[in-house]
Amino acid sequence: MSELILIVDDEPGILSTLGGILSDEGYSTLTTTSGESALTLYEERRPAVVFLDIWLADRDGLETLQALREADPTAAVVMMSGHGTTSTAVKAIKMGAYDYLEKPLSYKRAVDAAAGALEYKRTLQAGAAQVAPERRRDRGEAERRLSAAPDLPLLAETGRNQRTLRHSTVVYGLGLHSGQRTGMVLQPLPENSGIHFVTLPTGVEIPAHVSAVAETDYATTLSGEGESIRTVEHLLSALHAYGVGNLLIKVHGEIPVLDGSALEFCKVLEEIGVAEQVEPQREVVIDRRYEVNGAGEKVLAIEPADELSVSYLLRYPPPVGEQFYELKVTSSDVYKREIAPARTFGFMKDLKMLNELGLGSGGRLDNFILVGEDDVINTELRFPDEFVRHKILDIIGDLYLLGYPIRGKVTARLTGHRDNIALLRRIISG
Image (cartoon, rainbow, N blue to C red; front, side):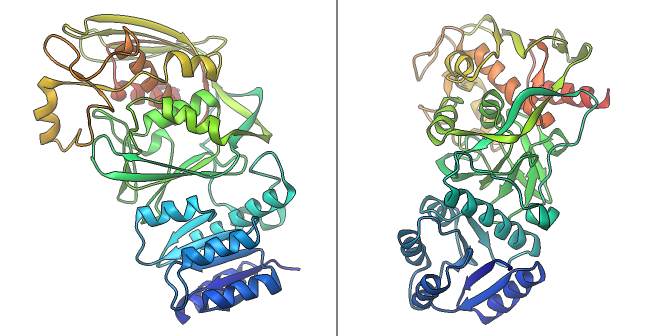
């Protein structure tokens, strides 16, 4: 018997269009224009998934969502809106919605949302410890048209399983360079999906892969179909260290900077919980030395090793000076203690140029280190060598844009995001 989906919307055109899409995919559908009627129909028919509009004539969609979740904590609800904002999407997810779609609905997004919501509901009903249960083999690629990064010749199994999050969560904050308030939704994905960004409200999917890198000035920016996601490296750094490889990240323009480090992302991952999945994890095993040379003394290289390690030599004028640090990424605990707290930094002398470039607008006294001519101006350092540790944080994040964890010894001197991405492209090209 096909799964039943309830569609709640006061626009007849949406009921007809969405009903047709889902019917074409083999689902049975039930429709209504009323929030009150939706509650009654849910109680009587217990549909597997509900597509629910934010704006209804008789009852607010978020109120209806709350009532559905109170009546059935396993209710899988996909919210829809033609006039929503990032804050509306974030609120819906926080209240328990599985997904949030912007109108006009695309065929692909609607099908993906239905299939994903079904997986989510089955997990809740089973009371499973992990978010992504066995995939629905009978529906093939229609269930989730997101694929992992392309295969590389250097891939080998790690002896560990793939990982995602136990359930969805929301992170609020400012974008460091845009200065805009942004809400970010982290949503589990099944095995072999990879990490993908989705732009709000446009719904453009951008893979977390070096092929999508568009800019590397002061931060790493991914782009696709005219949309961009800025400053991905801090979040990816934490995901790399914790081994989370299947995740959907919905965000408006830029990843929240939070306190300028990766520590808050580590706390989110630990609070939500990392879920072991069934499929084995693969990693990029470096087989020889790969190197890129920049201007002057800049050098970035990676060579074979038994684990991921990064050493970095940094040199700036006083008061920063020369700093060196080396980290072996043996566990998420080591990363969280030694690297994650290190914050991004900037110099007073560069503020005018950053402002002219439209960057740094979200920099506040509590989310980055501001360096003056003689001393740090706005904060106490968390480590005497916090600057070089943050450079290592960035490298670990950028490395994850290969699409897989990496095993090798990285040696860096005076390098930045542009060099990190150049090294990844060198590895891919062989």
